[in-house]
Figure (cartoon, rainbow, N blue to C red):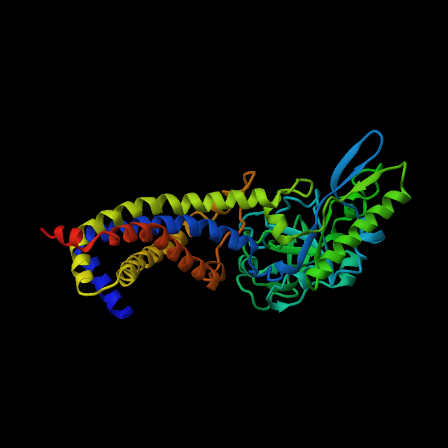
Length: 436
């Protein structure tokens, strides 16, 4: 029976090319707009290379210190790392990333004198490569002893290796000039996309290569600095235990330094999902406000096209009243006829869904440098030279196809069910009279 329905639907599609074309185009536009929004948040939230542990990753990126006269808001200092920040028990891995004012914007001086260029640089520690699962083409991360001694060694990405050495093989052990200092390559990784910005860089070096990292940003607050922390936990229970432990450490430190200063870490460490929807740690997050926002967005993207398509289907059903009347007179039930109409429209909706997916993919690829920041509270400027490619696992994930199919079904139900049901309620005599 289903095969017969689909065959009839294909025949009607060929007999009414204008209606079918408009229906498919309208459906495709609705699906495309909705899928673009879904793709944006899929890329931000899904476990994609190299951030495959997003579901188990938490961040502590800012802090606030207040005394009687001043209030400072920044990240943590090296002293904070040594005293307490790297010693939490409820975390499998703790990694620190340093935002260097000295090395920020540092240029590479290529050996072939092709012109200096500025790479994306990240100053971190060996634990960083345990949280983010980079694929090493050769070599390995720098070691803890490299970090402690401040040796100028670096992990670089494959695209940078090709630019510097014209190959990704035999690169380990070679040197390049960064900020007019010589760095030795210890490993080459498959580079990620700037869209995975927590882990993205083209050069990874020990943060101790910048000797300023040991100094706090101000003498007034010894724990104010430029280090942010990333935690890898085993599961949600350990994540909650870690958050409780951070609160306990905050309470203890405030008691120890009562009368000198007070530290506030808000609700950190934050989960990866929360960091996507919350612009900064101090911002108040309202879960239901976000639910209403996205619910309204989806409603507009689907309901408005569904109303337009519903009017088209109602007009088409009027022209098919005689056909339905004849089938009723030969014993076809209302449920059977309704099922036929729904399957016919589902075929058109699925064709529109395929068109919508293709349009969404093309739009995402063409607008990848700005589209992923379209829904952000503040504009994002992509640094020069940053790689913003969209990988296959970002676009062709099974979840994306499931979402597209469900959207097709929902749009089909919204647009076709009511006009078809109202038309099929009309008496047989009225339907047959429409044949005249």
